[in-house]
Length: 547
Image 1 (cartoon, rainbow, N blue to C red):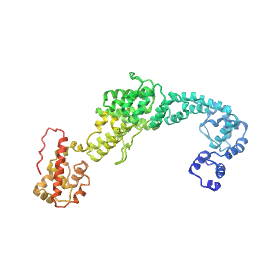
Image 2: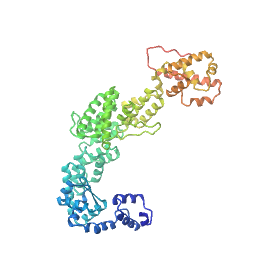
Image 3: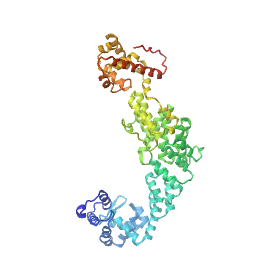
Image 4: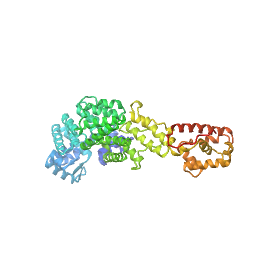
């Protein structure tokens, strides 16, 4: 219908705008299409406003018209709010109008006004009585502030031009307020905003993982700015600068405000990544306790996530499990108020306590969560440890690689440098079957991955068929498998032979001596590397025999 009347193609932007403003009102859509035909930009056409003036507002009683116009500044028409802003008679007038018009729909505790009627009434108020609008905005601000709706009060204070009152409300509402909304408020207050408002905006932006926005807000200096700047440094991976940014004393065991909570969080996290676990646990415990008391969700989740890492490194699985489950629970109750607890999700995932869905797919590019690269790197270390315990060399290498890729090497800290610096080729040295295999058994294992039968392998190795059968039986027993396919699957999984080794071997001669010599040479070299990396077990291993 729009395109038929407008006589042109209507864009998605135009359709979306009209859908939101006209809410299916057929006459309004036709008037909007006429405006589109005239080539006007997207917006509520003057034809619609004029239509509502003449066909709706002018045909109501003065009391109803006054109630509609005066309450047009409100985002919601609740009984108590309407009474506080426009008076008791306004509630009666709106109830009367709602009974006879589809432009005002009654709900449980008030009414819902049609967007077109609201826009026309607001325009009428601005044109005819701007001073009254100022009074109404102030009444709404005062009432909502008394109700404790600081965000709603902030919006009305801002509309009334009361910048200082709006700034105070923004500061008072943190850290309980919705971070995304506060970021928008602070952006609107700029450049009039003072330093405390900018500080709140930066902290709110960091709770949403928006480091670039936080950096823009932190241009001014004020008390507590160093704490938020330190948190920003952690989020972008600058470990060396995080501790140096703190400008608040840390001697208090119970931080009194959210800036001090961040200071303890930053210093505790820095201690963790630098390998000082004892002091890290103390700082992070203080931060978590104070954040929970202040209901500062982002700081609480970050502190608990770091405590999971501390507990893992301290060998305390019970504390790790408790902190991880609490961090995930706090985040899932209100995900808009905190960053994702990547370490906690990874820990619950690899321990089988909870299916988090946080495990990256094989070969997927590394993803740095909003909490920062150190958090992401430790989560990958947990996945690598799980793969190592399962003997899955490929998953181990991928997780280690992802962990290293998200960090700046010179900013990784002593802990992660040690955890992610292991040589993945040494994985097999931690598996008991690899430790017991002799060089001859490794040769036989690699020969089994080729196309040769046992008699053919015996001839190539210049031993009897019975000797090969004995060695294969010993090999199966040590690998705890029952057939050739099982031995090859486990060997490839643990890195004893390469995946795709069969394809490489089939391209060589079925009986050529180069085939056997290549197997022997590679197996001997592998055995020497494994033996060099192997821990002392207290029992003597058979000396490798010359092939």
